Structures are given as C-alpha cells and as structure tokens.
Length: 438
Image 1 (cartoon, rainbow, N blue to C red):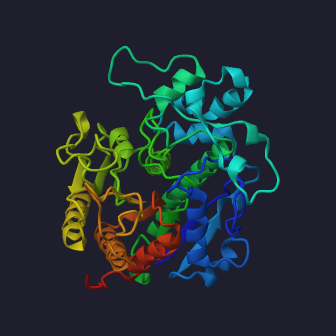
Image 2: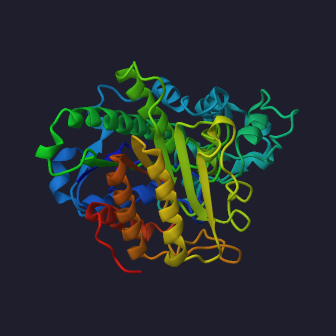
C-alpha cells in the first residue's frame, strides 16, 4: 500500500522555512502554515525544499510519495480554477466575496473602514520580520457581529461590511492579504487529488487482481492543504475554515467518475468520515439532503464545545438524504474506551454504503493535550497510540469494501506533535490488521 501526499505552495514560503511572512492575524492557537510545514517535515524530513516525487525514498512514514501539484501545471492556477472547483459545494455569492473581499477592503479609505471590523495582522506585529509589507497599515477584516441567517429578512447586502457579517460565523476566520492565493492552492490540491483517485481506479481495474499483492485501492491519498475546511458550509465560513476541502474532493470524484462513465444513472457513492475533535458541521450541512454522500462525524458534544449548535446525535440528514448523516457526539473527556466503539459504529455504517471512495477529515485535536478543547464542558483524551488504531480501523474498512481512501487535513493545534500524529495514522493504516493495545 503506497501513499500519495498532495500539496501546493502556501503563497508565503517554502514548507521547510522556519518563519512566515503571512499577514494572517496572530491567533493564540491557529497557525495553519506552521502546522502544514511541521507535518511535511515529519513525513519527509526538512533538510531541503520538498518538491517532486524523487524524494519518495526519504519518507519517514512508510511508503509515501510527495506530489507537489505546482510541478504538474503549465501555469499557476487562477481564480477561475478556484471558482470552478469551489462552486461544486459553495454558493457563488460567498465565492465572489472570498475572491474580492481583500481587494475591496484594501481599497477602502481608512476613514471608511468601520472600526469594529479591524484585526491587527501578524506582519504588523511580528518582531522577527525586519521588512515591512504593504499590508502593515491595513488590518485584517473580521465581522463586527453575526447575523441570524435563519430569519427570512436576512441577506448579504451590497456593502463589504454587511457581507462580512453575513458570510462569517465568527471573527476567528479573518480575511487577510494572501488568503486567496492559499485557498486557490488548496482547491488545486483537492482537484488534482480527486481526479487522480478516479484515474487510478480505472487503471487498476484493467489488471488481473490475482496478479497483484495489493487490493484495488493500492494507493491512499493525503491532501495536505493550507487551511482546514470542515466547518465551511454552502454559504458560511467559520472555525478557521473558508472552503470545504473534503466536500470539494467528494464532488470532484463524483464529477470525474460521471464524465468517464456517462451511462451511469447516478453519481458514485462517496463517504466522508470526520475524526476532528470538533463536529464537521459544514460538511454535514452541504450534504444534508444528498443520499450519494454519506457523512459520519465523531466529535465533542456540541452542548459543550464548538460548533455548539450543530451535529447532535439526532441530526441524521433531511429530505432524500435522511439517514445519510451520522453524528456521534462523545461525553466529556472521552478516551479510547469510548472513542473506539463510536469509530467502529461509524465505520460499520460506512461499510453498508459500499462507497467508491472514503474521505477522512483528519483533525488532530482529539489528542489529550490539544489546547483548543473546552475541558470544563467537553474534551477528549486520545493518545498517540490511539491514532495508530484509528488508521488501522480505517484501513480495515476500506479493504472490506474496496474503497480508495483520501485523508484531508483539518484542525490540530499542537504544532509540535502534529507531524507525529499524522505519521502515526499512516503507520496504522499501512499496518492494516496489526493493533496497538490501548
């Protein structure tokens, strides 16, 4: 079993650079570019720039090959490519906002920028940066309040300030200089990874499987993106998430499979398993009425932690999608003894769907020491060894139904252990039936 790790540039620096010149506002917990670099260093080492498949032999976690999608493109991806990919699962109004918000904000005279929408950027306050950037004088854009979107009278409006309050669900997901380039890179990774899944399956299907050691899913995939995505809904962004990468991958797999199999009556079935500490509320909402994408999320009880108002146990989907969403909120300080049966139940439900592909929203923040957990009302206590068993159980399920597995990076706020946790999941996945006792 071989793994393909898909990544692209972050628009700021190489994955091995120790610093960052991003104008993303400072946050006590969230540093997505540092997390990405730490993960890639843990998987491949950090002694030189991580580009191209030639470094496969230096992977630290099993049989991995790095695919830097920038190397495969004749020209850099543009806004049109981003819009095309993201529109599979997001409202065009929100995408237009994402595409234009920073330019509009930067072009707004300072005296016309409402004061409660301003957030200082890291570039302006980073003592390690000796060279000011053009954005130093421009604060990041955050909402001043959050609208009651369920009210019939609510709409985005035409002004940038009103649109910001409409599309954002919190002020932890700011608009800043360089964000759009990072999101374009993430969409490029999602599309390239998803398209390869379909092509790979077709190629392997041509071979006599009795002549191969591996099952049909001879590759697994890891989309190592800049920003998490599972809290992003069809027309909302929040929880550090702007565009839903897992949903994008699911839709692109279905689209490419349909294009290559035009006689098929309906899209191929896909499953999404979310193992982030926080509920995958955005993913669940996107596919709420869709019976072709099964969504299972194992997470902290929303009565005690973010997102607070979604993914309760009785949230099972609606309309034609009723029964195709499975939410498993766990009690306060749940350990492996509670997590394992919840994971097993979710994987059994996925098996019943016999999906063509299984997408895993790989959050790392269920680890016992992750700082974002609300320990007073929720929290989880998974260990490094538990993550090995998460990978192992996912592999067993995928093998049982011949599903290709795509891991996509979500949250995880201990940068110093993020790489170890990802590496451990992959070791468990590659080990298959070998278990580590908890």
